[in-house]
Amino acid sequence: MKTLYPPLEPYAVHQLEADGHRIYYEECGHPEGIPVLFLHGGPGSGCRPDHRRFFDPKHYRVILLDQRGCGRSEPVGELRHNDTWKLVEDLETVRARLRINRWLLFGGSWGAALALLYAQQHPERSLGLILRGLFLARQMDLDWFVRDGARRIYPDYWHQLVKSLPVSGWNDLIEGMYKAVTGHNEALQLRVVEAWNRWGAAVTLGADFDPDALQDPELLLPKTKIELHYAAHRYFVEENQILRDCHRIRTLPCIILHGRQDLVCPVETAFSLRRRLPGARLRILAHAGHIAAGEEMIDALVDATDQMAEQLA
Image (cartoon, rainbow, N blue to C red; front, top):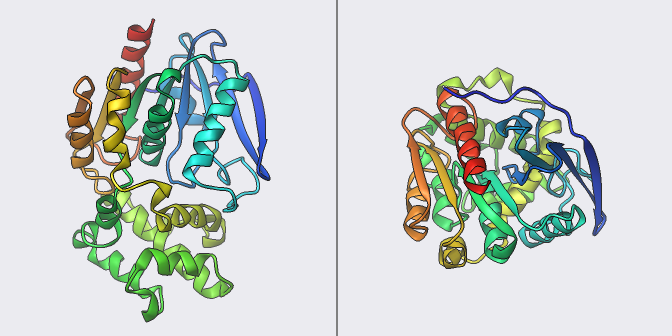
């Protein structure tokens, strides 16, 4: 059973100025190693120190980047000039600034979608992909999470989510919540933030969810604004775009890991991508869920980076 590599600190920290955003990114590991870009999920979350530890620091040059408005990037929660294609531009700018010819893309959930979209736009700059908890940004994926899928498993938290909004917002929950968190009614804003994050945590963590462990809604507001901003704009991509454009990356090595118990992104998403990428390796983890935690998922992720290091070497 493989575990995370020991903690390590970055050897270089950078900022990219673009459209009024200051985008944080860092490098750690081996400066002459295989370049790998870690893409966090959300949209809206950010990178954490443990994210450096999926990669053997003797073999990888690890780049972690906090996407616009996320984590250590500023202004936190900023929605202006914040969309999928701006993120793809940022990645390409960072690659050029770091003088990297081609890099490996590693992403989970929304990070997996962004990795696929970047690779499809820049296949000549991509060494391969390691994808976890796959999200494909289709309407059916959003519907599963907020309309008629996960709510059948967690009807109690679903009820709380709906009741956080006035009746006028019930017809389109995403639009209603987006207007609430970007509006001027502070009480409504914080109520929706709490309900949205309680819903997401319940579906993501399952039996491990502790309702009392939820962060202060004010602290969660920037992340929630970005998450709902992307969802309300259908992630700024055309319907089924990721699967449609898979022909552009069919020759890239790809490892897909997905938990059988993932209720945020059902395993169908990974299976659908594998059918479009016949050369990809799909591994379904019987006891894993959506997040990059737990012995089975960590073992699979570290093993995937080790395998890819051998293959790319």
